[in-house]
Image 1 (cartoon, rainbow, N blue to C red):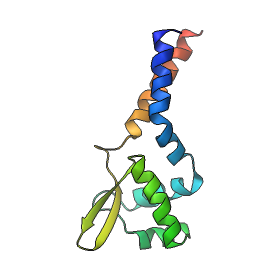
Image 2 (cartoon, rainbow, N blue to C red):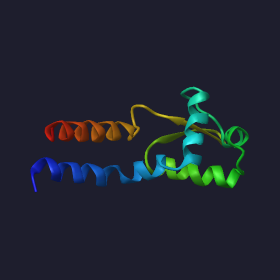
Image 3 (tube, helix red, strand yellow):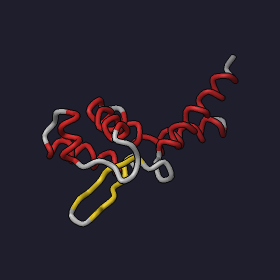
Length: 110
């Protein structure tokens, strides 16, 4: 196996939690709701539940998955939590790098 292939496999493994998190349609809707609200300070769970028509526990569950995948971040203000996409800490850039490497390997296959 070539070094490029080994690196690609490692990148896929590194991106698996991210791919799993964004592969779910419900989490995609939650991400859109967060993005529609703008950046910092973010949006509260109650507002997200209204936008995506899910229960509060369901939204909280999906937000935890997005946070574990380092896509969504939280800002705590007193007892309130605001969820937002943090471009500086987001793992989404890892996905971009993965896609770029796949494209390079595809070009080499011509």
